[in-house]
Image (cartoon, rainbow, N blue to C red):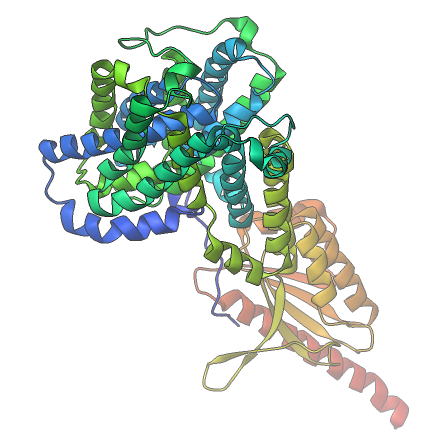
Length: 597
């Protein structure tokens, strides 16, 4: 007997990325945006195209990088330094040739929240230590080839986290947007406090924020990435010309001329908050980067390797921290922009870093005049794009496990430190995965018709007497899933001579729980003079059953190893079961005949 479904077992030498697709909110939009363009344009590899794409990426990253520095709670120039080191190092090392490793709001906010207990003076060295440590963690994880594990972070958890990051980012910008400094420590509390003290906000600061927000929404529709830059520049020019009281980048910190020299932060800057923040940044960066890399095909058709991309992000963060930069990771927005601007190879991302270095060298005196409310407005606009109502509604309609995971992650992101929210999200992902695997078990009865077709039916609740029942199982059978199988197997207690053929093809291993379940079921069959036949066993599974010595393979249980022909071992098991049943029934009839005579 056979069924239409077969569990796929990847070969030992199969690339990690072929095992699963790691997705995240926004990655689907990126994939859709670049796929058609990639198929049409990747055949025309020319270095000038990469240089132009890199320039567009660098120009767009000026406001984004500075805004990310603001989000991390440090001088915005450190965001631009990260946009130099990240694309260059990541572009040279990543297996995903077009993925741009740059600043992201999620990583910046995570780092900033981890260090918010420090003063501005202490926070800078601590930030660089955090970034380097996060890079070292990612390098170590990449060397141990943990890329395949990223698929265990569920989409619902990632969606709740991303939306939470978007809302939290907006809340963190309230003081900069309004010119009012709330005393409440929590972000949610600051929002309520500002609303209750609306008369104390600075009208000029609010006006600059609103104007910048309108510009960054409208101008890119006509001018592309340059429009985003102008949306920040134009309000800054108005502030420089007419309003002295509005905060600018120069008020946050000095913008040094030239490029920073590599340096390591002092060891004293490392404390438990730095370590926990580095772990959170490393995990978030790995998951986000995996989603981005899976969304952009390589121009030369080479496969992507998730673990190598983790290594690239790790070395990029080490370089960023060493050159006074904030955390970097795979960026959905910057990657999409670079590809749509004509990128043909990894040199486009390298050019993006080189162009950023030129911009920083050429315009340090202009950067100090950038209005902070304009950067905050840009962050708010970018954060609103993370709050995807359609994805949230789709998750809500999926079922209560997805609702619980996404809502819990969203709320913990708002009210707890992000390090704790990340930890809870990882645990939730594991729990949701285990629950789904344990609940998604179905048992079907296989009926072979004279024409050779095999029909699947709902198995009976109780086994019939003196018949062979062939069953197939869908789903994983580890831990709690094995107990689910136990509840769904037909009951043998009211039958006489029931025989069950249970098909287990495609499972390379059987856990201790499953062996215990099969042993108990075999004992129940034995008590009513029945038998259990196991078919389709792999060599490994058969050896495990033999080693445990719990299933008596010479007694009420028989085991049949899988063959290259699907269904062959099940047919053999069913034929042997019928032969045994006929012999038993004949023996019983023979015993009864003398008495009747």
